[in-house]
Length: 112
Image 1 (cartoon, one colour):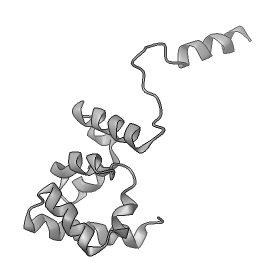
Image 2 (cartoon, helix red, strand yellow):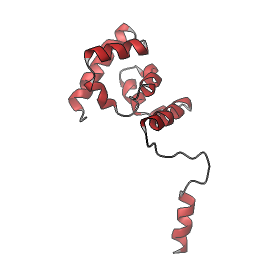
Image 3 (cartoon, helix red, strand yellow):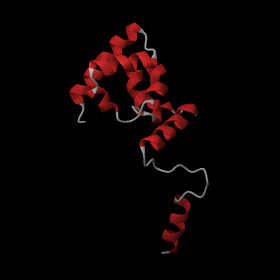
Image 4 (cartoon, helix red, strand yellow):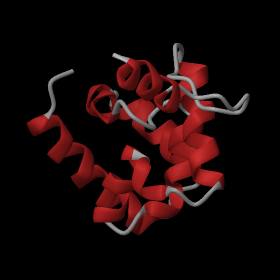
């Protein structure tokens, strides 16, 4: 029994700066931005997806706009909202084609 009690002590974070699970969208974005700043890109779902199309340079913008984890919501954007997002992120014309294809793929495989 003592081993179990001691094991719990080693698992629980004792550091003041230990990560907490995000409880809001803002907390989620802050955590993802922290990972982004620390170059922990493989822990960021948006980065992984964008990297498949060679668009990983837009990761920070997607995180800041709330698309860091819930990428399925991109498929629900209207054409007008999509154009506004592309303009906000300053996505290059050739990259918009790639991103449109990526969003189409998400919408085929996504459960919102």
